[in-house]
Length: 501
Image (cartoon, rainbow, N blue to C red; front, side, top):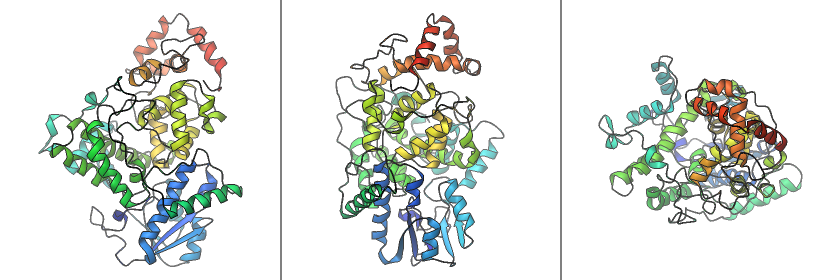
């Protein structure tokens, strides 16, 4: 019997692997376990719990009599009830906790991970070739493209350039409140979704579990057919405009031209290979510009793969990284997704998006949510857990490197060369969020002082010794000497405390 975890739901978890390793076999019986304890351990976003359970139950319905679908209190209980001591196989799970579980079960044989372009053994061989040099994402991305022949013309990158980021950092068009592109794919709920919603209501009513956020109609695919339809719609209607505005924000258009495919990839409904190969085919057919296609390929073959590999390469102790000694707890309004308590329009807008959908794209995550937490010295491990719980595409392997390494700079530069934070000027340039805000991005002090601008300078001030020695942050640290009102800024931000801005 072969065990499928809830993020191993696509056909590539049953077929032969890319490197030729055998799959479970066409007639191998399958096991899926819906463990209630998962939802007790963390206070997940309601929309995330809905999506995961809906996807698992849809997959079980597709597999029919071939699968034994067990609803149990824990995974161990589910195995004891359905398998006993009989042999069980499983593909390598996606978290340290799940990996420890399967290793502790004597009858379980663990095969290589699926759902990624690069086997872990190949990544470690690449690391050895770096000969002690820093593991730069750009170097890794170029290696993946060479190895997989992605956007390549022979040995050279397509059009002679590896990186088209310069073409993909445009601010939003000021003449539109939304991008003039067709909307993304939206699934239709069915009787399985009705059953899931009823079960979640019952569990919550019984006091067995507790959620945050809102469970609106499901926004994200829950089965393979829906995921393929979402990919097709993105490639056909939205990929051409994705690149230029991938870093931009519009208050009325949280999706912009983003693909909304991250949850489908992370549930295993789509494979990364099919996504990047079909995107490249759009460019080669002349239906999408190279900058948009390269930006999309970079997100999947570059960043997603890089984060997955670093999760295992750095080890579980990476979670405890905290070189900036940030220990402040997350405030209640943040944990409860209480966007209505917030006056700062950018943070209020983004927190409301998370509350209502369990999703927002990468720039709000990094430069609105992550930047605010970094500036205020919040505990990076607690913030990692918050992102894990509150985002539909959030998993331990996704969030630990993204939050600890990139967003919070808690590893001191093992993953990125500088902290990713800014004052209100960046938000003003890349969005339409500052106009009606009660704060002004250029003000450091006073009633209209932007919390991001003031927070930026106090963050640099607190860590001036460390950041002054970093060539990418040394210049703004030197500018602290020219701030005549720095004492006032310090006092102001200390008085703000953890109150919503």
